[in-house]
Length: 443
Image (cartoon, rainbow, N blue to C red; front, top):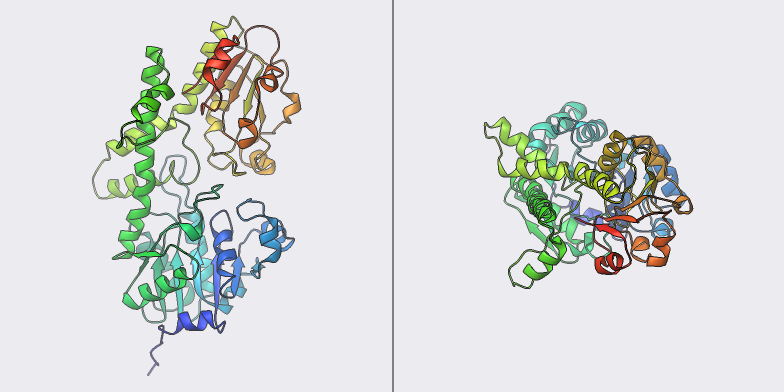
């Protein structure tokens, strides 16, 4: 008769360094988690991208999330050898969960990670998924893969938990340590282990969710809520532009009420806000419910890049400038400010729509991962020095370096005629530029 596995002492074994913790997926989410845990326990950091692993081993942080010094000084054992996962008993899976072109969930990364981990899973392990998914994926998709690949039985030989990531790439204030962590487990024993392990690194503590599905649902609605609120602001921006009213001035006035929610219009990209709602609506469709509010918000936000490009063209015409072959610069290409990540950036929608009008813009972004931009989009980023003699400039991302631009800096970007400036995030002083004769436009 098989001896029952004692999972309750796993936490003690981790802190006594008798067992190791592994991170599967070392991107913007996984790598900071690995570095944080390495200050408390022994950590194996696995990623199948060998080039990325070599950068980490060289003390380079391509994500800019923790910085080169933290990478140089961490004790994380970085590896692209999946068999090293066999040395760990507590596993955290932090791989992306994107959507396909038709907006259906692409579970390929999380399924692939489950197969890799399953092949190397040992008895007595606890596996925690962090990837954002619709309720049910952890138990209905991941567990069967882990069981098939490992030959082990979930609940008997290994346990499962879920703790959604809440790391905000590029944000130096809201970090892993300072954001309450939602934790869940398949049973009370697992929940207790998962909670204790995360409490090692999350200074503000954890919230114990009632079930794995509750934790999955909590994560997916966080970003859906933000998406809907931003969509409302984008719709207001479209309406107020037609009225000739400045949206930011309206929001500033409305924001003086104590319970007004301070959201702003903008392009919604990245791996969370622009993706997670589709996971929720996909699951709803499976259950026979067609989302109305969530998908309406998604449609508005997905069309904002096209809307910006149309306003580039309108402003060029109003400034008596030709549209076809107009010289246009787009400043910023990442999905958010002060972050090198270009994946799922919606700036590409502006670029593609401008191409439709016969405009091939110069794209500049000192923060962006240029290799990634070329690999994913075929975009070659230019140096700021080539932004000269432009007909129009689109200030698309609110990088700190762009916020420091003075009017004399901006003046040098243009050639003859009226200076057309589209300040998408509204980081410049509208009145100052209008008084200087600029054709200024913002959401």
